[in-house]
Length: 196
Image (tube, rainbow, N blue to C red):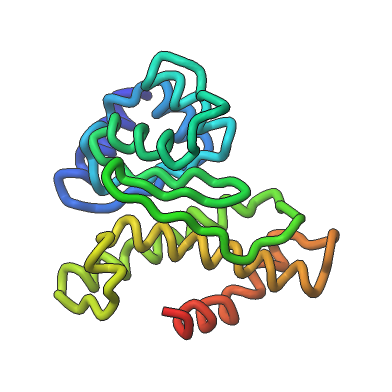
């Protein structure tokens, strides 16, 4: 399996096709981080536990409890050769090892199972749009110019997911599900476009 995954990632890297890696893919990358090292077209989306395991693998030490989260996420992105890392949590931290963004927008006290899937799926779409805008010199945003397509796409996906969560929670409170969040995508995208 290692060789198949490695071949897919390396082929995508050569063709400059972006890849979002979540869940079981993160488990694989934690075991074989060299597969993505230097692949700037890769975005990892670990939750706190997944990030802790990845940090331990790369640094050779436990994730320090007293160190700034931004520093740790930036360190991991750098050690992976400027791969973009989206550390999901109470606040989402996005870094490519050089620059970082923090998304604390919206959200709710209710974290839904499948919410990370919404983030990963929307990240694929935002990455496509951001790269297309950057490659066509259609960057209408200072943020895209300053942070680049991968960081901006990652931030947009975090913002969108948190806004969907906030909107759904306003309607369904503690019974909110990811399906309820999906129903809010259109409203959330319009809100994001208006806030850009």
